[in-house]
Length: 586
Image (cartoon, rainbow, N blue to C red; front, side, top):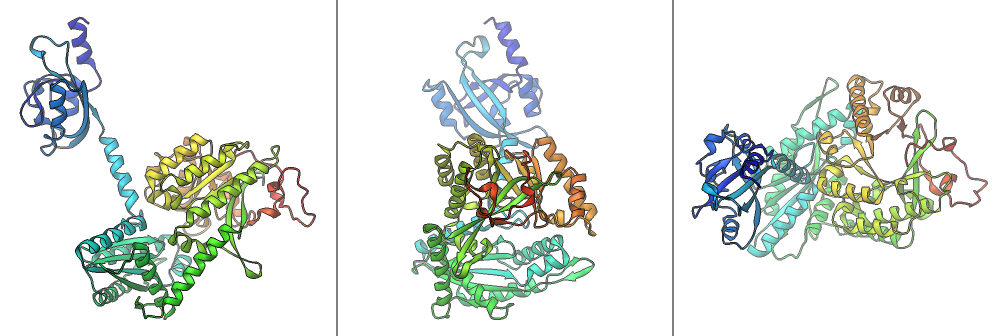
């Protein structure tokens, strides 16, 4: 290539580039022989200012020596190129992240002979995004406290530290008393304000070495390293007093709340794992609730809680038995086209069969399932049944089915591999299988949720985001997740026609506009009456769900979910909303 053409390509390149002399000094990159306009813009300096400047002067001082071994190997001819990341100091004082690629300039002549060709890609946005992902993965979106996932990790770490170095500690499990009444009486906004204030009270009354977390809902936990049971009990009482002093405003009134607390200790030689400590603290909390609430109970081996341990284990055995012997029932909640009354798809929900024909809702047993590591087994059971239903469905009148997933199914590759294997020979259109993640689950596992979304996209299935709009990061991570459906958080739908109507209406309209721009469907949950239904239609919401539109029923009672060619039970009642598929989903 003629020298003039090479110089022109270098000068006009949109990528920051420079010819840099190799150096024996710290960092391995010496004097800048020439830089193009893009490099000048990236660093905030003119090309003239860059000429003759040491490359190390552009880089954060702590990063100068990083990867200098790669530069040395490059100069010795052991490699043709190398790449690494460093922070740059912009001329105006801010810092940027750059991916630096260095190559040997074989054909350079004149004063550039022997120089290294350096290219820099600005990766500041990616670094910022990764940092936010890491933050979201570890923190509760409402309170900014550590979440359940991170808390469990830190309890494990503290137990490992105690085993190596001796000592012990304690875990406090706290739960607000009658918090549901606050939400019901004052609304979810007031409830959120109270949760945030309680989080601040817990953090403000704990030591720097303590770890405060929100496990979910109105449940908090505190890890107390190097604390005796007596100290932990005293600290727990202090925290309950701090919570009782919290006051927030709601509906023009002052709202206060009390809490109960369970305490469990651990020592270096007691052989406990994180689950043991958390279950013990949870059982002590249960006893505090049963003892009249607003108090502290400590788990000890002679505290009489062994029956509770046995009861919890019996629940886990009941769940395991249901998994092994088909002891669950599957119900389906219709999602309705608000304009035509047709069923767009069904959301599947699981029930545990109990003696006497009683069906136990998931809220009762999922907590135990999660504690004992069986949530992913339940997800696989429901998914397997959904695939069977779709495979047997009348291909002329298909119905899409949605499966709710727990956070456990996002961890590791197990569920993705299960899904891929079970879909390998399936003949139904894959878009008829929808997976729902709640916003809180997606937020706590954001990077995993993104990866799972890509798996679903590859397999042809759809992803729905439930309770959308409930957390501050909603719009941020929607940008980075391949979502097909948004289910608006029910609190906004319930707010229509109340004093919160103007704000809730604006939020729903914003979600509809956003979804339309992204090509994403919107579902409104908790549609409770005809007026709400009409309001939603006027705002552009086409799909709705709620008991007013159609209750959940056993899948065996829904004609359109029966195997193709099966004769329906003459006693079977078919919902009028099944007349005609909407074609909106699938």
